[in-house]
Length: 314
Ligand SMILES: Cc1cc2nc3c(=O)[nH]c(=O)nc-3n(C[C@H](O)[C@H](O)[C@H](O)COP(=O)(O)OP(=O)(O)OC[C@H]3O[C@@H](n4cnc5c(N)ncnc54)[C@H](O)[C@@H]3O)c2cc1C
Image (cartoon, rainbow, N blue to C red; front, side):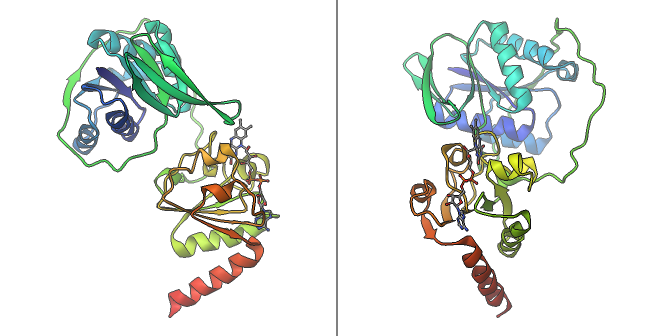
């Protein structure tokens, strides 16, 4: 079985290849890129299982998703791949859909898993706001999926073979007019080893200072449930964890005043150890936690911060 993977960034391509080598175990994994990879990046994608990387003209990328999809679909046809797997970023989802249309392929977007099932691919997707998991069989070859696997610790390996291909796109060109820089510094929640996540259990924006202080002391990143960033705008969008936000997998996840709705759980389920603080003993987060404290965060946080400070001083 042959797979073609594509992510906008080398680490995304690597995480797709690493995920596939565990799940469907393709005999050959090809990757597509629109920029040259550095030697280190090549070793990373090689370690993830990519055997050959095709470097396509960057104008295929800059001309927009239609042109990128054209290049990917041509590559898929030339190599007779069974599945095209695109990293499910916003742009990636559009590219994947357009690639599937060009290949007349079966397509599932933003899946949470891909497995082999006989001659077909069995994919799972969250549906109805993340409350249910739908299982779909993709029987046609090739199939196309978009997925955002959690980042893996990839051991660098042999560099893949690099081939430069000139694919002339027939897609209409999209003109680049301007780019708007995000105001805030980038937060790399997905790579954080420890995350302190805050939810609606906090009554005021100023109270988040407690969580921020705890995070500073233990060297954690601050994340949040969607209402905190989306509805209340107390934190930046890029800090929200879950179905419509970031997927994190830290060694330690501390959930403060988060109920644990499925849409949130999707984003933190791969955490190694979960500690939660909640006043409600029946909050769904209780089932997901290794240590669940039925407590008022307004009481437990100041005590924890003080005792950590004392320990650090002594
Ligand atoms: C399509 C869709 C996508 C979504 N995507 C996401 C997503 O990606 N991420 C996400 O997080 N949500 C998402 N949601 C929203 C999700 O359904 C929940 O509404 C949200 O996760 C709830 O956030 P919360 O746990 O902070 O708030 P709540 O559900 O209101 O929970 C607050 C918790 O705090 C506890 N609490 C209250 N006071 C205290 C106190 N003093 N001390 C300790 N605990 C206290 C309460 O017991 C309660 O359990 C999505 C919803 C939809 C429909």
